[in-house]
Image 1 (cartoon, rainbow, N blue to C red):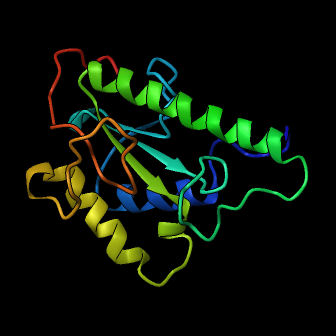
Image 2: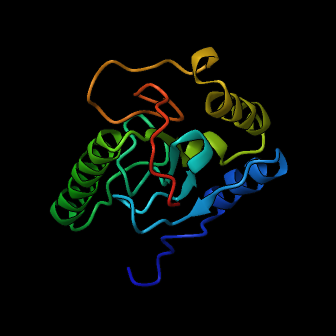
Length: 158
């Protein structure tokens, strides 16, 4: 597993290039924040996690399927990943950050990618006029669905 990339993955690069092309400036892998978000947009007090469907147990996704061998190990591994994400998302929200989670399957194929990325951009710049539905639960946000209101904080050290 040491050979598995954890940053600068293809889905992450697709999102970053799109946002940059739209004039958005961001930081990547900010270690000062819980969970080292893939993309941090300080101006919008928003963080984006670009998740691989397998590693984060994307329910109902064709790219998520437990391996046939060593099932217990993989099941526990993915459950730990999900629990860690819930914990990190809760901490980020407590600090006033909006959390957006983009799933690999949403941008993997070219068909529909451009429209999805446009909706993601609009969700960031106009959170109240977002195509994406705001969730009222404490569950993890699904693909590009922010769970909390856009709150501008006073600390801008990123």
